[in-house]
Length: 256
Length: 272
Image 1: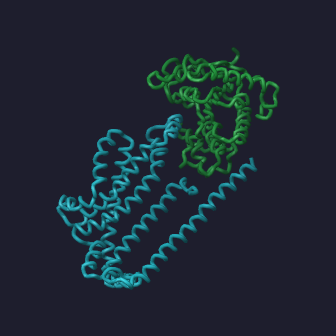
Image 2: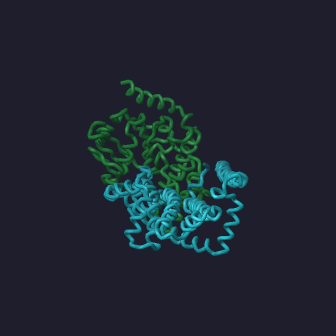
Image 3: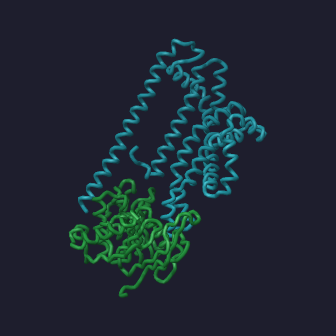
């Protein structure tokens, strides 16, 4: 194995309601250094639960998750998360929302300022520092969420269907932004999605999960070279093949 | 990016503009409504017995008579003192107990039966008890009455705001490793502020009622005294002056809190 493993999910099992509801069981996967691993699965298959466990927001019932050699017990500063619901504080302006994690991490005022400005600029929100979230469109709100996570300059970025609630056009714009940001600074990323196209466009590898209780159905390598754009990926000869494969894997399980 | 920024900027301007236009229209309707009622009142009042109802212009004249004798200023000063002291106590007690009972289950369970009981009992029934408890007919029992009337909407609103904290934001805070202290300043307090202010607005209305009731029952002073005094001598025009002033106090104070809401919670300034 050429690339180092940054995140290792080892026989992770999660049950709810005292075992009545098996969310996922015996999950195994690993995320390599500086790759984007997309976790693709049907709605309600426990993808989000898995991601929350990766960040230590919830515990596992069996198995473990190890990031950079340390078992995940609680949220860590070198891991940052982007939420499907954006998770912005409505009473904080754009700048304060982006600075939130930095302040909690105890950075100096000057560092907080400088980093917040840098990442607001990176996600294209310069000029909106003093706007409240409700004054922004959904796409711009998620840019704030992205800047807040990136500002932590995390080793691992966890993305929980970050573009799931956006319209198709905005989603594609933000996917391109994410590819551009990756190109500037490649970073290890776990990206949860239920969109096959999104998984192919963004992922270096795709882990396809089955319906609940989720297991790893198959892991695909997306052999489409970077730098990528969404349009470029869709036009790539491998795209249709990969999409059909994903479709097949996802459908196989739902009819079973 | 520049095109997108321009679009977003335009959307921002449109939203703000709409809010402002709406407000102007709101005020026109409010003032028009008051003018209409006063006008109808003015024309209808002379048809009735002056012992029952007097016209707005007669009340207006009575207002200047009462100002002339200095009675009104004295009574108003007295009443405002009780009101503000009582409201201040109600806000402090309501917010502190509301937050504590919203955050800690133990406090909630210890407090809830009392809050429910006292909130459902007509507070009027408790006023004589308060006077007895204080062994006085001075300001303290009246202030306590205002506080008793005003405290519950503030307490309950604050409590509900804290209890219904946005769970997804709580998770965000945890994901960024918040401390308990920062959880309060980043999440709990700001999300409770609009509810606290809404509670204060309700509390003001109830506090004004408490003020008048206390002035009726405990010592007979202030605006309550003016009402009783002039009603007893059938000077309905003069009786109406304190009634209208109390109503105006309500309008002004609640308007002030609403203005305050925009100041301390500018993120709520969205189109209705």
